[in-house]
Amino acid sequence: MLLAVFMFALMDTAMKLLSARYPAIQVAALRALCSLPLVAAYLGWRGAYAGILRIRWPMHLLRALLGILMLAFFAYGLQRLSLAEAYSIFFIAPALITAMSVLFLKERVNLARWIAIGVGLCGVLVVLRPSGAGFLTIGGLAVLGSAACYAVSAITVKFLARTDRSEHMVFWLMLMMAIGASALAAPGWVGMSMADLPLLAALALTGFVGQLAITEAFSRGEASSVAPFEYSALAWGVGLDWLLWRALPDGYTLLGAAIIIGSGLYLIRHEKDHAESEHP
Image 1: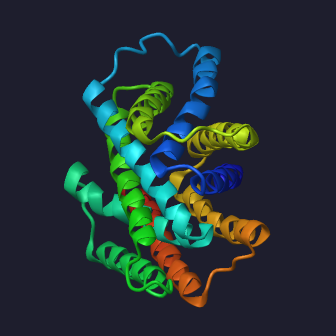
Image 2: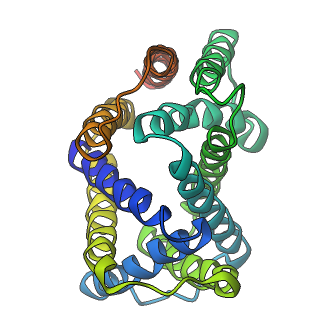
């Protein structure tokens, strides 16, 4: 999980560098296009092409749309925020997933968990407020929108996992995102510079290795034990911000991040205790 988070931090750094020169929707298209050949090769190695067309098409199309929006919003937010600020806001995703599980999966959430979700949302407001550009910046709202898309996508995965193979989910997500985001980006496509080829290669490799590592982490370890390591992204974000842009998060960002992470850790811990009480 630590390797996965580090790879995704490097991937987001490449996206941030690219988003300074290309439109956000084009960066989203590049993310999918770069990863697609590696994903296709991985499916061949796993022998997973059998039955690849027997999938629940509407759910995959919805997930692809959410994936395009998630990447485009995140790339747009990275144009305006540091990595640390973007990660701090994105950390609200676990709380959003818990809240949405009530609506879509009919799961029960008790009062303590609703309070934790509310506390997490307050933490997001703390991060958004003191950015220097006024309350609720466009960049901050874009990252919040990205986290919401990620949360809804995570709920769709729970539905799809009942019938579809995980390899097929990854393949169709990348293919549909590559096609959809490229089509949306085409009218305003900016010609690529040869100097950006190393960034595109880094985007492909880090995204692919990160996806493999996170899949391995959740398949080998308990979700409640593995998930908290996602918060190590903040450390990588702070380090990369300082290394590349000489930027450090302000006190409000760190305070908001601490509030969000605290509520997230409570939700993860509560989930584990709940599971253990149901299955002693």
